[in-house]
Image (tube, rainbow, N blue to C red; front, side):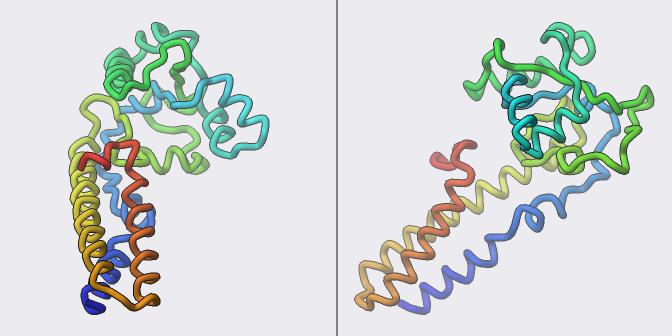
Length: 208
C-alpha cells in the first residue's frame, strides 16, 4: 500500500512543475509571425476605469499595461484597425459568457512601428515578453502560436485526467490504510493534486 502511495506522490512531484518550467521556457518564440496584430488591438478582462484605479494604487501589472497601451475611443474605432482581431476576441468572450460590451475596452501599443517592430523592445514589460501567457490566451486569427497553444491545452487536459485518476487511487488507498501518519501524508498529497486541478477550473477542468 505504501509503495502505491509513494509511486503516486513521485508522479505528482515530477508533473507539478512551475509556470516558467512548464510553459514559458518551452514556448517557441520563432512561431511569432511578427504581424503586429496583438500589439495593434488588445484588451484585458479588467474594465479601463478599474485598471486606472489599480495602477494608481500601485498594482504593477496595471501600471505596466497602461504604460504601453492606449485605449481606442470605441469598439468600432478598434475594428477599423483590426476587424478580424476585434471580432475574434468578442466571439471568444461571448462563447465563454464573459462579454460585457459596456465594460470592454480595446487598446493599441504606442510603441508599435509601421514595420510591426517595437521601438521599445529592449525595455518591454513582462506582459509583452510572456504573450501569449497561457494556452488559453485569445490570440489574433491565424496567429503562429495557435497550433502550439492547442497542443499545450491538450497536454494540460491529459495531465488533469491523470491526476483525477490518482485521486481515485489515493481514495482507495485510504480505505485500506490504518496507519494515522500515512493517512495524513495521503491527505496532503490529495490536497496538492486537487489544488493543481482547481488551477484550471475556469477553463473547465471539472469536465475533463
